[in-house]
Length: 346
Image (tube, rainbow, N blue to C red; front, side, top):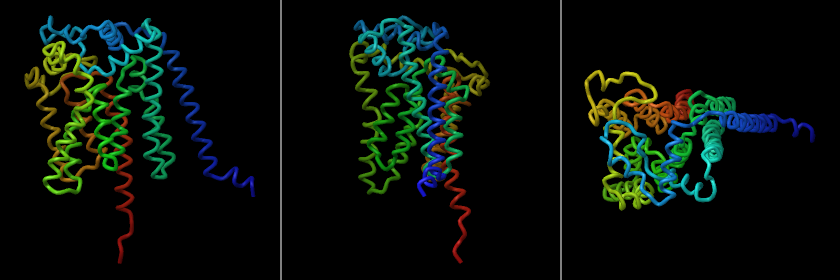
């Protein structure tokens, strides 16, 4: 009787899952050691490190853009400063050498990378789709965009992790969800295009019209709270430098790490105008979400598809924002097909 329990199917599944987790972690650690031979000079993390040194010395790195022309990219700091402040803190605490800092932060990103895989696994596992859970966790961990982001030490893993957690806990813990979105934006504000979706979902919560308006206002305050709080010292010391740095992504030349023509370039659009086709196509997604014609993860997936396919600038890390929502949107579709296959009552 005891042996049958030991070798029961649930036990075997747990052991198989544990084996996959251990092997995945071991592989990622090995990749981290391999990546240490990659020269990051010239990549974003190199300039993040330099700007963080500026913060650690008590200066404002957002001021650098004041000597620029808002067109040519001189590796200005264009994101909110939370991650830069974390890197500066690590430098103050003793990580003075770039090579040690690279290894430390890549190791941190491996943890967040695996955390994203665990979140994807959890969604499918709760639906009793163990095979798909394992498949999509491995799909996230070892696809080329994830590995490339680990190689180049992009901080996107942290922002994506908090974003996925935020989406998972909405609407059950809406305030926490909004704060997690705010935290994600404070690290890297690519998720800014999801803010209208969060406001739509907040409006759809059952409440009176007056209370809905109050909830929207509260939601907006929560979303901007962390980026604003962490940015205040930089805004106060150089308001123009901070504003121009954040807006630089809208005015810079249209060449990213992947140079391919966008519809904006075919239309001759530049600067802010080059973002109009992307934003125009996002409006139907917002409307469909408002009419409850799209599920949560599917709405997010479509927004990031539009971001990758229609943004006038295309960088390799953008694909990391799209990739986890492929399995997450599939998970939602499993619910739809499960319901549609249920026999109708006589």
